[in-house]
Length: 543
Image (cartoon, rainbow, N blue to C red; front, side):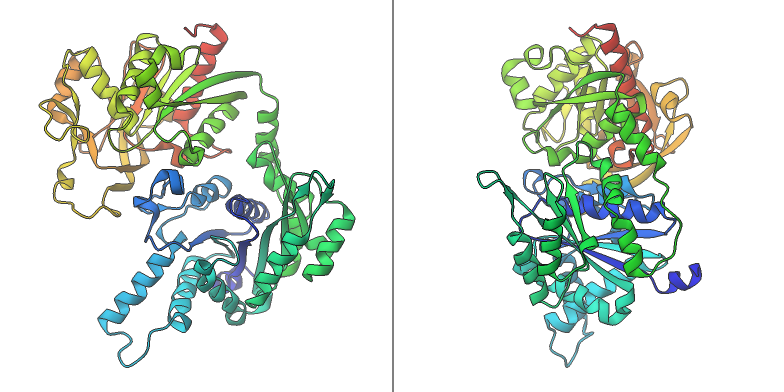
């Protein structure tokens, strides 16, 4: 049976209606977790309607986090959800935009693949979309495909037409449509309203797609009569109307959906026979989060703190670190520009740990450097990621090594003391899209270090997204004053991890460990960072 399913995978398409930000990505990821818990080999795919070929050049304030995969793809943040909820890794084939589709088709047209023919949205664009879907699904039992945007938007119509055709191509017994919609509660009327859902389903049916399952986003359980009304007017069975209620912790969602009978319904509709789901690990995660034995406050000193989606993987990795120690993590978002204006003491007093994440450009960087100094001098656990490592190096160079003009070449192109410099292979790069050091690279970890204690092994693989690196011309100077280099590329050319030994916990890394953290397997560096913060919280030593 396994071999047969591998040849002919099944598909679940997840769409959204009424309004954006209902949580399609989390819903799709939760379905993936439930299907995987039943023993199915699954993959996940995000179709995005924007013209950008990838999110790599998009503003974090507009789009949120750029998630980076092992193979160097800059992808939508929902792929982070997928990897946190299921075991299969994502890559370039798992995120596809309108821009990528049109780029592929136009390239073929310019090459002469369509000589003599008129290139049209149907069939050429829709065929390319289907090709991407089928390629991603190859070798899996089940492909879960999330369609970005909201039903009714003109931008997503080619994707919706393509997934409509998939049912004809692959057979109705192998294709399922799940629609996420909104059932709002009108406080003044004291009623749940089903009309938005009805209209959303009507819009979807108008383009030829009848949803099989409805996930109804709501802030309270749906009564039986409401489910019955939705089922009647939307042409689905009552047990296919699923309450997608608000949860305190996103990792509760698979459990909530299971209680609603979602996975049983999906298995029934797809005619899949499999074992009952093994959800003990998810139950353990939720239990540890809901019953903490302590708490810590972590200051996240960043540039994009007004949009939490910019630090999605980071936020989750901190939560995972808290789950590992059964402590509740409270994130204090600190605007690095405010640190510049008000000072580190005013903005960071009382925290148990300080984390400086990645970012680009000069805005707010001096505030980040001040935060590093505050953490170093007050012996507060510090974790610097990407730019967070770079500013730690700059701060150490200035205030410990006496290099007052130390900076990064990114901040000052004419600097006489660039302790952080543009990577040599980046000098000739002119195009901005997809040209950074991207994806997973090996890193050897030096013995008797915080990093080695965390990882427990001498070599790891971590994901990168940057153009600037530690300047080796300053390696001896900084090392001589106490900055310890504990992570290097296998050829010793690139500095990947720095530490300050005479400190409770001070570590900066050039890579992005948050992209590899999972609720079931917290990343070792986040685990130990939160562990150090928890020790400080218990000792009550916060200044």
